[in-house]
Image (tube, rainbow, N blue to C red; front, side, top):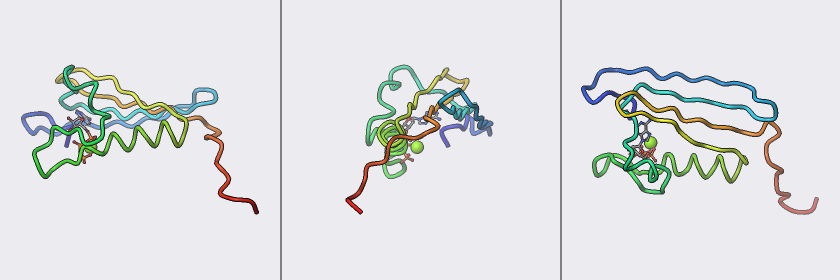
Length: 105
Ligand SMILES: Nc1ncnc2c1ncn2[C@@H]1O[C@H](COP(=O)(O)OP(=O)(O)OP(=O)(O)O)[C@@H](O)[C@H]1O
Ligand SMILES: [Mg+2]
């Protein structure tokens, strides 16, 4: 829905992956509204949403950010331009992060 133009016109979502040495990069690009400068520093905050009351939880990006940074040792960032679209860029280590042992076998 965030990728819809304000006039309701359908946009495009393009997903690409590439290998970058010890990392993989996944780009999710849309041709939507873009993220306005005044909220760019808030979109990863838990419960931050611009959707109407009862529609969005504001949890989507907060959960994605936490999981990618803390669980996978990766990076989630975005590039955006108003009325052009947004690209979320996820970088993940190929080897993953070291798993924590649950207990002694
Ligand atoms: N692709 C996008 N294009 C433009 N704005 C976006 C995009 N993705 C997120 N946003 C902005 O960031 C806010 C927070 O996004 P997030 O995914 O965390 O929550 P949400 O989409 O509002 O709610 P939910 O994920 O519960 O549906 C959105 O309300 C919107 O303002
Ligand atoms: Mg969302």
